[in-house]
Length: 504
Image 1 (cartoon, helix red, strand yellow):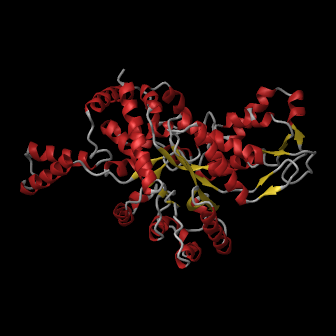
Image 2: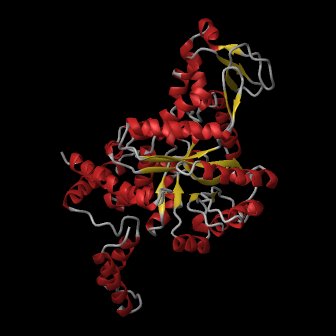
Image 3: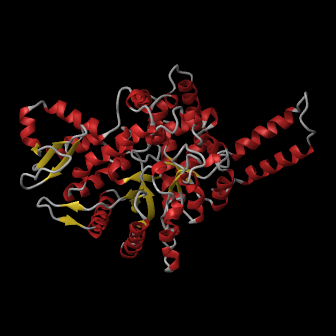
């Protein structure tokens, strides 16, 4: 968003005033102090946003609500989200954020979108759904027209309909929910370090895999994911998708083209039923533990998918735990292929999701920029790399900040200490997203917005901060420029309606 003329003039006046001020001494000039304060305020996220009269009234209301909640003895952003969630749900600020149009979700993974209650209470009650209990105290699901053959690491497959006739269904469903999420009463004890929590995190995806890759469920799951985001006042979604092979009841497998056509069909059907929803696009992803040969094949396939499905194919990314995966530079031969072939394949790289400094993967953010990434996923380590941070700003490459994910996966405990607080104070390009909300019990985007607004911004973040973050979500999307302009115009109409209704 372009800075308002008066903001530019104010910044210029501050610079001029500071240039004429004497060096700091024991008796500082109050004018110098005020000039510095104004300069900082103009620089932070939302600092160039000019609020109209109605917005100013809502801003004051929001400020008072924020002061009341920050004065309470328990402050949710300073607590683990699993413990803070009940407090957040009682918050008046959170209630306002739920009603706020939030634009787009730009960083969310395909099988981490839908609240697991839907999977358990809906999908596992369908005909032909089998479950097995594994050697590592986990479980797997499978739909099959006949009794599945035993296979490691499974025990015998049991038809869920039969199992529910023998044991308490409520207890069984609760055990499924525990296996499909990371939620626990004592997260610090359950997950003492990153290795433990990441193992559990990846295991939860494996539990869901047999449910969400069953072809009929795949489509319904995707539709339900869009619906849950839409109900949280989201109008557009970009989904990181592995595009895993789906299967039919008789065991037949479907390829990625089938998955892309299925996504295309679901997106169109959802838009026809919710005309004010802008749509969704996919970022094709592969795991960063793959070797170079496999990566070359994946990039070639990504180019093919983009050619065949230009309306929904946004670009390419690597996923998986960064600390144990291969660094981006390892894949340079694969990543150079599109340019060598004269094809524009946008990249949206996960990078900087680490608290290890000086490792090979700690250079991923620099390499992501060198490969001209459109956005940086997480970028938790960005503040430790001033040259990379400056380069990202000059290139106008935003960071996709996922507060709850970063906390649950043990990069930070108190969100007031999240590096994004520094980025927000500097007005660095950023968007707020939710990563894998289903696994954290944080369906939608409002929980992450609350944590960012209350935790990163402190008392000074305000309605202007929120407005810029919301607009950023569409500005930094992969939508074509003409569509993007119309989308932002539609968002501003929703925003004005939200402001007016919130003042009633």
